[in-house]
Image (cartoon, rainbow, N blue to C red):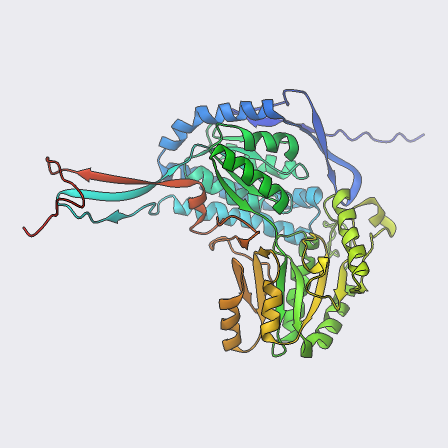
Length: 505
């Protein structure tokens, strides 16, 4: 008789004050492979307010020493982390595909974004962080500088488990803050690997602390903690508003990066083949699980027929499967709850009389039944006010919305509560530039889909998408530091600004 091999499941703890430790309550949760829901990848510490308190205490103790460390030295640590991320890119990408589900090519891109962000921030460590400004008085110098906030809480989502944490951690650490990091409960293993790399790169104990667990327990405790000076949160609009209210009541800074309902405007004079390429990648890359996903295609009526026909033919060819399989185009969605949420929106679309062109079903054929797979879904003849055209679905579902003309197309694109990413496809330079002026979003693309942000430019949105902060680029430092203005008077006498003028010599 053949015995079944027993696979030992590893267990991981929090990282607090330079030590890996169990949750105080001894609780754990399982992280699963979404392509095979019966495959447990690991058991991970489930933190609560006691674990968060330990982490904040450790961060408070480490903050003075780290904040006084010269910025170029802090940058050296981040630079070493960048090199380690680069050396382990393939290993990290494969782990990400197992834990989150995105196809391996995309997982490599996710890790590369983390590498790029670390390199960019390491380079910023020797750049200017203020300016010298002339005084109106003699023998007086005035300048500004950026100083750290203190203990910062970083709460990140599961869809970009390497890129988004690096967007937050690298500038927060470079600025001299101590950090408590709470990753999404669906992707703790990638977060653990990132923390291990920062430790190996030389980050001192207590400067970065990791607490794994749910948003309702660990995340809530971190937001509410009185010694946490600022919160940086990426997630849904609904949870983001709760975070904003809690932070406002405590008088703490908060940076929010929330949802999107992004549109690609396709004009009749646009390159239809290029627009179809962009729509396919923008809507179904990462199984549609991007805040920048191209979930709406607003198409000028003269182009609706050829665009729909070409896009539908491409959607029908998409192959569902395990993201580690090179033949796979679209991987699983993250979990069962999201799987059923996506399907409910397909039902809503049909109830609203949108025309279901493809998909609209949970995929259960063969090995797909083991995972959380949803058939790539395309609706046509969608009206701008339908729920599937207004609400973020966060899955492989896209809607084609006809528009009468250029002005109507822009109005439809702008006609949601979100303002993250919008795009326009046209060969007319005048209309392209007018669209750039009139589209209401933090990011605008011309002849490219609504995804594809690069780390050296600011990332973020308007309206309900956020609260004005921008991640990445030169502005990344702003969220995690504040201005200090310095006046140095070496005249040896009292000089009164606005009263005593310097006058001629």
